[in-house]
Image (cartoon, rainbow, N blue to C red; front, side, top):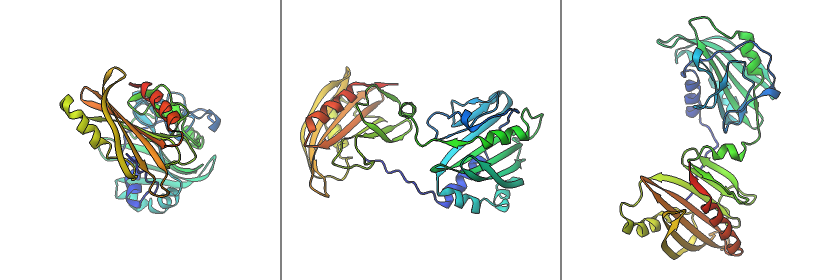
Length: 327
């Protein structure tokens, strides 16, 4: 089972993201002195900043909010190469076509260099909004930061406070594992030395132990996922398990060596074992798949490692399997 994560961002996607930044609900800020050193990071976000008093980390999106006053800060991380394309394509005319009137655009200093700051208003009813949109080159990424507040009514936070908060934006080189694990609907009690490669929030996670991030046959790999559905009857589980094993990386000479029902953490499950070879160099690979069936869905864990040292790898995989619990 493979995940393909694209790093390039086309102009169409950039346009969608920029349009999204100008169409989300409102933001505001209180005067205070903040510094990059005081930055807070939303859950699993590469981008952080020091919010003014009154703003709290949001539990529903990557950013901060003062929901009582309809004020929001939204943070979006894009590939580092996206900055030049956004700077070139986000013209006043292009924004005007989206109903956004630009009042000011300027270079804006952040910790990692100069970004582009746009101050604008969007007067489409029912939400008349003022926005500060900062596009900034950060370490390894491009940050898209949107500050939004109602255009009507008395603002709680002035322009100086907003600029101070924007100037504090920073990025971190990686997201701590414990934060990433909160994005999947299961707990992994024992990573057993494995590191996270990538994940699909709410659905799946890929882990490995070795220098490569792709499915390299010379190092252990694990993919854990949850899906709705599953076999309707217990008698259908064997066929279901065999079909599920078909979603492997493109190994050659794959043959199933064992398939049998078992209890996985007290629930009905199925273990399937197989062998294969790396198509590039013929390295022999051992594969195991565990399915755990529940009400309305199932958990799938598929792991593989070189045949040499398989006993040790299998012991690690089994310990990880036994530490899995639904969230």
